[in-house]
Amino acid sequence: MSQIDRPVPMIRTATATDIPALITLVNAAYAVESFLEGTRTDAERLTADLANGQILVAEGWDGELLASVYIETRGPVGYMGLLAVDPARQGTGLARRVYQAAEERFREQGLAAIEIHVLSLRPELLPIYQRFGFVETGVKEFNHGRIFKDGGSAHLIVMTRRL
Image 1 (cartoon, rainbow, N blue to C red):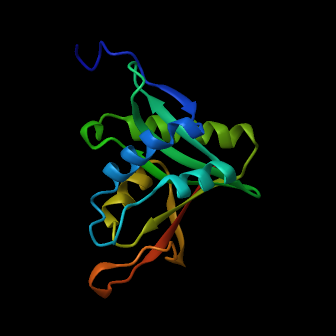
Image 2 (tube, one colour):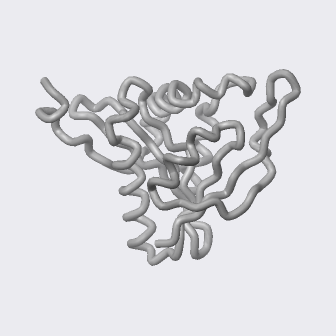
């Protein structure tokens, strides 16, 4: 079956039963971050994310999770993070699909903007988010409980997109 013949993935809100599949998806997508100790997420972190916000998932016709994004309302701004696409499906438009679903949720809430944080050690991500309309608006300290290998360090680049 070609890409064109396959049904469009359904976008839905994740539940606690999705946590095992989300752990696999997110950690596979973030495996490129070999400069950090440990894995990107686990059941405890995802449970906290579900308590503070929502995780939107793109689900394939067979029920497999293909992509995800964390969203949270922070006053007049929507925060978006943990955008993950199955490595075998990167470059197929799934990131755009889950991003658009997040943007739609934020618009429905009447929010003014979306904010994301990009780790400074991942400069290849900046052009991707710029194509979505984000601009760099500041920096923040990286404080996510993960330790850098070889004593490295980084900061977060704050990017914002007006809605």
